[in-house]
Length: 240
Ligand code: 6GU
Image (cartoon, rainbow, N blue to C red; front, side, top):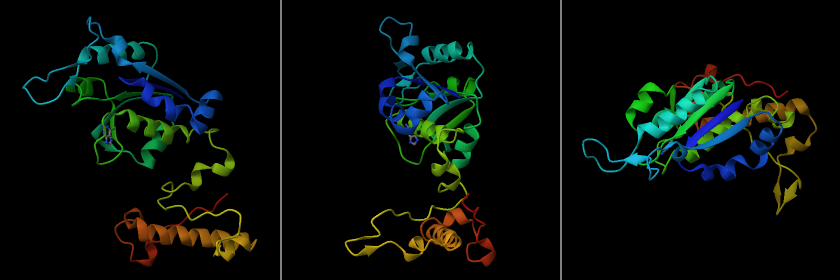
């Protein structure tokens, strides 16, 4: 997979994309992530990328020319399966969207800033608009990093088998069960006995029940509209 990110602040991605699993995915050649500074596409002598809005609202708007030039430049080099715009009024990111995006070959992500972007960009170039939640960030960069992280970890080969994305919270609409490691007792706080029992079937059953109970208590919305009916209990895939 190749991901091209268009931004006014490429350095905001230094941390999230150069550590841990995402770093290893790039080193292993499983994903290429390219950052493009939109300012490099500005042709005006002060390298302006924003301007006052028509109609006189407050705040600055990202200009169409440099953004269009950047997108056209990249589109001229390869086909993009998705050209995404990060914006708080976009579709809320969820695991299903990340799963779908992880199947793509080439993705372009445009990060908005200031009061918004000239709407013609959104009308004529953008194929999908994504928000990461109902709150406002100073720009789309942190949100884009979240999208990239959630998508890249789903690319086959990025996670080892023991980290398998199949058992993630949300992958099957259930929150993950609690996990513990040694020591079995700390400050008098004991790990649940069943996990020390060595009985795999019992442990699997306990995990399934914990996942269901935690989801019912913390995120009943994930279980659907009718969680009181016994039939609403979802079938959980057994860990492989
Ligand atoms: Cl994608 N951008 C901004 N600026 N704020 C957000 C967001 C995106 N998603 C949630 N809040």
